[in-house]
Amino acid sequence: MTEELELLETPPAPGPFFRFTDEEAWLDAASAAGFMTTVTDEDGNESEQLQAYTHNHAIDVVGTITVGGEWDEDGNETVAPTTLDGFHINYLGDLPEGWEAFEVTPNTPYRVFA
Image (cartoon, rainbow, N blue to C red; front, side):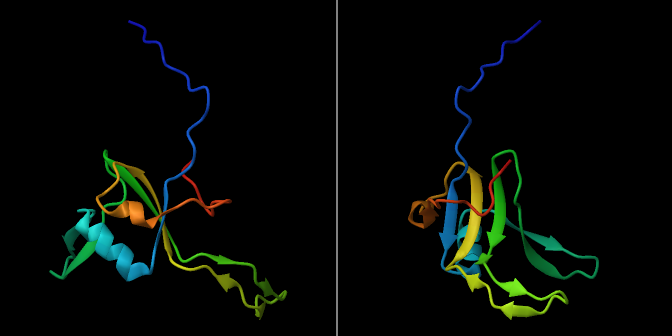
């Protein structure tokens, strides 16, 4: 049995991209969307962990983005990089409720899904 694959004339555009105000706002949104799970370590300590990749979604936590900056040959910073506003996430899947408010369209994405 052979199946014909439908070829895309245009590859899918990268994104969507999201910018939350900070990491805490991102974690709150991830928790509200059901993307966090409680894990227990070998000592019985519980913590929340992001389920970044499932059959329903993929989450790439980019985090804080910096641009520019200069360092000398020893790795010492000579010119500080600029920190962009927000905490950045790339996401594939059904859009969680309320996330539309955080979607951004960068001219040059810092990182995309391959």
